[in-house]
Length: 106
Image (cartoon, rainbow, N blue to C red; front, side):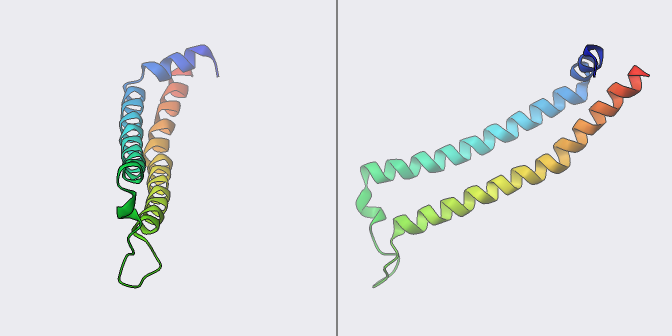
């Protein structure tokens, strides 16, 4: 692709929309992940006894292991949400931008 096509793509209002949407979504997910992860680390640092408690009476599973397992699964789910949105909404918008840039080139 030529520089002119790239410039038309960057000038397209849909490109600005794509960058804004993708950026907001990525920062939101990053904030959620970092908050959960560092929140867990803070509990480990300042109240480790809370994580060492059994989930139920006589259980070998502790709260800390259960929370970490939940976080692991939750982070995978967030990744799946991002991939789904990227493969549908973001890719569709990208294709529109590319098509419009090529149409203007002809």
